[in-house]
Every structure is written in C-alpha cells, then in structure tokens.
Length: 108
Image 1 (cartoon, helix red, strand yellow):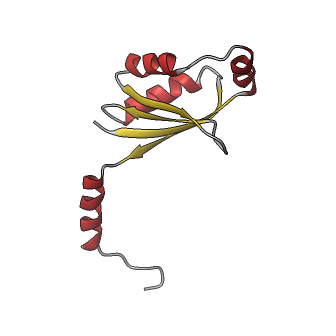
Image 2 (spheres, one colour; image 1 turned 90 degrees about the horizontal axis):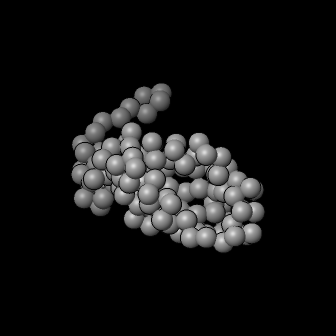
C-alpha cells in the first residue's frame, strides 16, 4: 500500500492545551487513520519549521487526503502537508523510465 510522509504544525491553541495538559496524541491520530481506512506507522515531534511528522499508510491518495483533511478541519493544526513517498524499487523503475525518455529544452 502507498505510504505518505506528513508534517504538521500545531495551532497556538493546541500548543497551549498540550502545555497545560501534556498528552501522547499517538492513539488519537492512529484512531483517525483507521477510521478512514489507513494505518499510522508513527508520530514524531521535531524542532524547526514543523512541530511534528507522521508516517501514514493508505490504499490510495483519496484516503491519505481524507486523513489529513479530517485532522486539519478541526483547527488543531495551523499547517499540514501530506507527501506521497515511493519505495526504492519504485524509484529505480522511475529512473529507468527517465533514462529512455526524451525531452526538448526550451528554445530547441
């Protein structure tokens, strides 16, 4: 099944709620993933532009979008991105196809 790497930033209200009452959000996020037909493989927090990352598995892009939209629609996040990732095998197939592709640069 396709895998998706997501990254998110909490809204200021969510950060305040977590500071006031720290809680592991993995179970809640996992339940949401399962409710749309997917699986959460992990949830991590980070420093930098995004507050955290997740790895989601789902049968198709619509399921991944439903997962992100269902969480994003709550207002708990100020930003969410869901990025399809490919296996090394898929990447090698893509590179082989690219090797036989033709492309005319602008002006040629």
